Every structure is written in structure tokens, then in C-alpha cells.
Image 1 (spheres, rainbow, N blue to C red):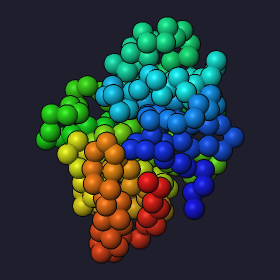
Image 2 (cartoon, rainbow, N blue to C red):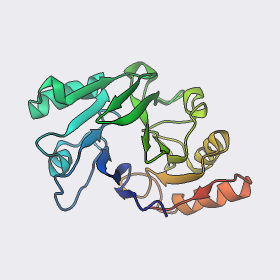
Image 3 (tube, rainbow, N blue to C red):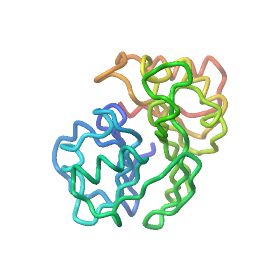
Image 4 (cartoon, one colour):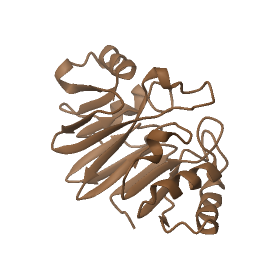
Length: 213
């Protein structure tokens, strides 16, 4: 199910159908050099990993990132400005023909991901399906307002929602499918995915949970 989506670890996500879209590539094994677009949600090492980006990028890869991360990309890779799309929460745009909406991603009551940093999640439309890649966040008003077919929700706790909070967010959004992310390694118990699936079921939420980790 959702064969176009793969998660190699944590929040390192690939959505492929015609174009290869990567989100926060991290701990990549074999080099693929096939990324048409690399989306980076924020600056932290497990989301902006230059050594892993190098494994998936190619000569004409386009990057999409918030301002602080875009500056890191430009400095790290000596990247020309025409290959970096700098975004902010609320933006709506098209990148290589892919519709993209940018959503604020933050912790309302924790210090790890302040709203003031302008870090983001992304809603991308691929083959008629809207995928919401949350980034690192807890429940937010912006997140609750998203409309999507596929929700990729962090559920490992500490730096993001835990599995109960991720299930609560799923109940607000009511996607067709939801994929738990950001657990097992390097943070969050390996059981978070199955615990999340149980919580969604117990809450009577009519979304299909798809485990990819």
C-alpha cells in the first residue's frame, strides 16, 4: 500500500512517481543520485544531513527549504540561487510542476523547534494525492487545518508529538491514510508505530494506518 512512499529511517522520506521527491534525507545507504527535488524541513542534524544529501542529489536537483536551512544549503554545497527555493509558512507554489504548500512546523510549548525559527512542513500533490510531511512538531492550529489524503506524522515524542498526540492530530485531519514517522532510531521507541496504530483504532478514526518503519 502506498508503494510510492518509502522511509529508510526516522523522517527520511521518499515519494516517487514520475519525479523523485526526498524529504530530510538521513542515514541513506547506497547512493541513488536521483532526487529531482529535496525538501528540508529545518536545520537539525537528523533533517539537514549534508553527507546524505550528497548521496541522493544530482546535477540539477532543486532544493526547497526555509530561510535558515536554505542558507546552510547554499553555503555547504556552493549552490546557485536558482536551484534553491526559499519558503516560509503559508507559501503556495509549484516546483518542477509539483504543487507545494508550506505549513508552519513547531513546538508550541517546548524549546526544541520555536515558531519564530520559521521551520516548516510540506503538503505536496503527487498523482492527485495530497501528502502532508509534517516536519518536527506537536499539535498546532496550522497542522490541524491541513487537508490531505496521506499524513506522515511524527510520533516518537520528546521533540515531536508522541503516539497519542499524533493520533489526536490524525483525528483532526482525517486523512485517507496515515504513516507514522520519527521513531525507533535515533529517537522514540520502536513500538511507537504499532502503539500509534492501536490508538487510531481505539479512537475510532477512519484512517488507514500504513507502517513503513
